[in-house]
Image (cartoon, rainbow, N blue to C red; front, side, top):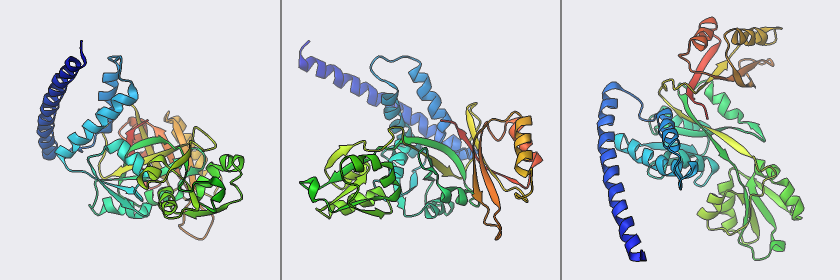
Length: 354
């Protein structure tokens, strides 16, 4: 078969795909009307995951998991925007890792709103300026994001999804000669995550200037020919700073967990995670935390994570706890736990476990 014949066959297939997508979107419009009548959430990550898993079970020959997710996450995003236009708030600036995480979940068709702080990102959803907020909660190399946990104590919003994203840093500069570099910009945490690279390249003695984000580092480097930055690939591309080295982080398994915040409750999908804030009275009293953990064990609840934070309720050294467990708030055992501790526990959200 000649090239032109192949192209005609592809054109026919593309016509069929477009026709099928149009039919899909027509059904989506009907679903949107039904959801509006019943006040059902538009974003259903557990439903989206079931669709992807069903397609993967067909064992496609050419499309792997990443390819199917890339295609269908965009289809899902277009579908949701037909039902209700989406505005996504994220911890900025443009080109940050949080921006990258947000786009990986919501696709390219949504309106993205960058904010300078985690607090203002959450406020945008509380005040109705955005439908969802995407913020970091922990990194597997550097631990928990304290500000996120502290704000979860008081916000009426809930965690509705989580995103785990590999964090790969690159070294970018406009300088023609690496020896001419006088300054390196980056977020303070990134310097530590890339310390081995800096040492191996004899760059550890150069002035390191911490800035509020790796995207800001790329922006400053674009304006300073004697500087370099440690930033994301998307940040270097956005500000047109040439990349000299990629994947320079000490640990190739560096990941950040991001959470998606909104104002609705997910339905149980059978593979859920529930986040809990525990404000125990008299944490200095022996056995207070033990009794909570004992009751969790008695109810056969599996803890996947527990973090302590200063309670900030008085001048003493008292602490509160953030706990992730397997299961949904509507599961009998988790519901019973909240009945035992009605004043001490706050439900932060139940969502699909990645």
